[in-house]
Image (tube, rainbow, N blue to C red; front, top):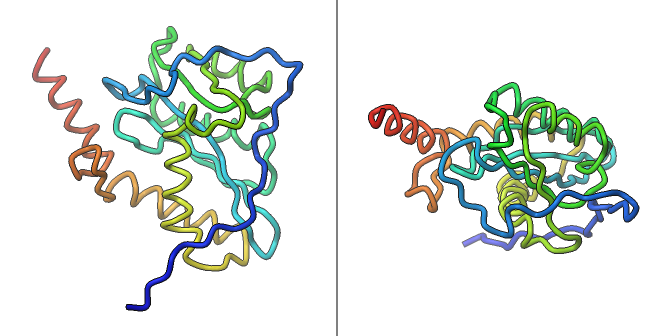
Length: 204
């Protein structure tokens, strides 16, 4: 039937912990459910091998309907890179603040950087961080990375970082608006959120 399994490449370490740095508590504790949008965001980034070198891809996902609310592709896994993804999420979602929204990540130095932490504080978002070397502590973000790799990255060889960025843009749009997710009752994330807001409006 001309079928073959996805082959994963060599693992690259992306989570580098600064042991001397203070770390927020884990307020999620592997419970990735949310009662409404903008209650819990999960963040992580992954890498893509190209002929030009590695491309790094960051995602921020709203846990309620697994909608990707921020993303960025970069040539370098620096703090600016993940901060840009956060800025996009803040611009798109405009959360209320007062720490009603929890932002959960691993202990990567990018997410614990002073500038990233200060931006969360400015936006009124509560930081939450899992443990080191344990993907279960950020399982939802890891799931999004895995779907992205299987549905986009492992399907071809990538020549340029620009190709990765364009394909990521297309995939995020498809994922949010047309991909059917079983945990949501086989509807896309955008539709699940729209249904929530319609129901909330009728209950007022």
